[in-house]
Image (cartoon, helix red, strand yellow):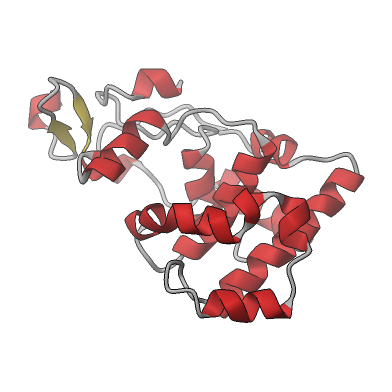
Length: 199
């Protein structure tokens, strides 16, 4: 299939093909082109992504992306030490903050997950170690979105590991989205211009 015949690609005004889901609005285009799928091994960024993917469950990523600056503010730029210190009063305060997704379970999971991350660090383990140990066991290159799974054996394995370590809101679908976003898996379509930069 040629790029021009692929309904899951958009030809932009910049003369480049990109995954249709990331073609608009501008905030999504920038995320697609400059961030999604780029390999990340930074611990804070990985923690942020795990938390935000949990908030995204049942919603669109665009909703989360638009609220990300507020999430970073209220969760101390996802510094796990600071987040782990948050308590019930902070939960109640955030439930009243209209700038973020006000879901008690997800807010409490973020605080819980910060504590679990600190426990991993005390055991000389990092999210970076865990994520990249769940690298793809296959090297397929998706041509259309029908080729992109929502769950894989890798994401199931990652989910089980994180749940075993006490993390919450880390189901297999959430974990696969995080693996994609952090570049452990490169699911930019074959003819998307951003695929090479994410490799």
